[in-house]
Image (cartoon, helix red, strand yellow):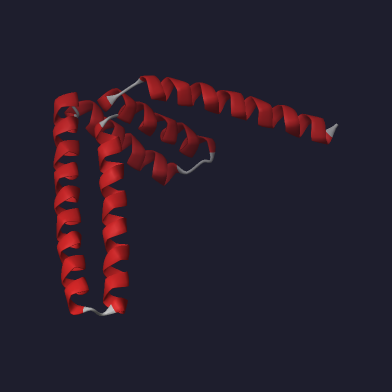
Amino acid sequence: MNKMTMLCALSLMAASFSTSTLAADSLSGCAAKKQNVQQQINEAKKYGNTHRVAGLEKAYSEIADNCTDASLEKAREEKVSEKEQKVAEREQELREAKASGRSDKIAKKEKKLEEARDELKEARAELNK
């Protein structure tokens, strides 16, 4: 019986999670941001984390008062621009390392370039939300 109860509980949690995920996927911009914070507030309340609830409620209030879809998109575009600049810098550093011929430096610079490209990819994904 204990296993059956656990399976039912897990099934209900999975169903509620997928429903909330689907709802969050249909939202964009500030509405999605507010819903994300509200979900975090609900989780923090569920676990009795009062300090986290207070911080998240402040964040929710800030979003409600100050967030506009235009300002959010502008901030995301600026982040993409910064990440593009970082990739360009890392590419230059890699070219310099290759010119030096030191394989240890080349490997480090290749790794840093790959990390910068990953960050750029994430920023672009955020922009498209």
